[in-house]
Image (cartoon, rainbow, N blue to C red; front, side, top):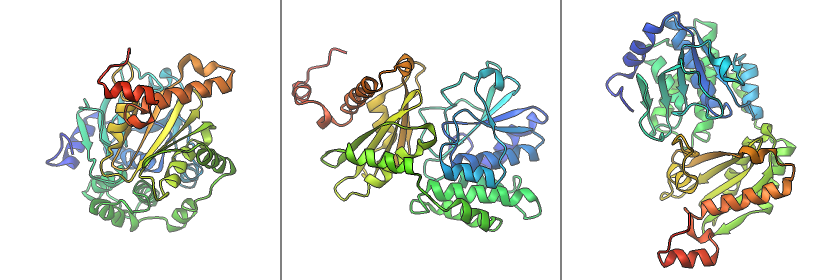
Length: 366
């Protein structure tokens, strides 16, 4: 917990109350997932209880079938924005389940960041009046459940909105803790609180996990292209439709089940970027540090990748290369780039000549 260790509930209320009547946007980073959606709904509820009109917005599309079902069944209203101008009508910004604003869009100069709530380790100090980051907790929804349980816009069962928020919260906790396998005592307490008001029928419908044919195709590509070096595995899956982006993480989850592998990275081209997921069972691998070592930071100092204790992800814009019509050459270049970068974190992936040079203590020309 950062900056609000004494009483986060009082600190959040103190931060939001003066904004009464002013438009605030809860801008989700990346493709909206259940933990982000549930946290955003809870934050919106808290804002509106304090008289702050809050809109949930996202830039990247909702890519997973389960997530689309969650939004549809719970009737979650979210604004999909495609330009900076569309955010100009908002005065304040809140981030949930992330410390970093969506990098694919420039924020308006007048949009002020006021709150950040996350359970991932961030890239560094976050500059906002209210910051609550708890890497020891399995889901951001658990943090928001603690706010509600502590008396800030609590769930009582008397409002129609209670079941919707509770269902989103518990599904966010469930998915981000791998069906509670990675849940902490705080996550269990949060889930127990939300469960009292959950719409069980909706939760069952959302939780029916199906796999699309195209997602299975991504897994097939990953298995066919798998490279294993000791206990580390890497697989490139080529071009992946935006709607199947989550299949990259799903493939990584599946490959990690192989008995001789404790860390796996799967990557592909999604739209105009290289998109990848990392999964690990190794106590010595920190996903955020691993991905930062491999892929570094952009020109603004933001890391291309991040993560938590057992998983992480990265996105690297292709820039002008995204317009290339030579699909095979582009993919070959992406593979070379990713393998070269990963060799920084896994030296055994480097060609033998480069490994000998590094063993002698020589430095690369770049």
